[in-house]
Length: 85
Image: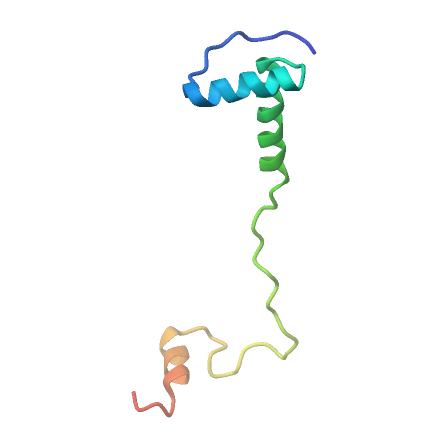
């Protein structure tokens, strides 16, 4: 890899002790574990699919003539027709 940035990260004591033990078991460094973990999180975030509204169109002949002009009052009247409103 190229250059490295030195930084300080605060980690809970108990977690740090676990990480040190895991690094020793895996014969690696805490730094390597942290870098691997960060890469994994970034990869997961990139792979999450962005929400897409499913296509819900249907075959037909367009809008009903009563609502074709798009007036809200005509649409509302059609929705509530025969429902006592």
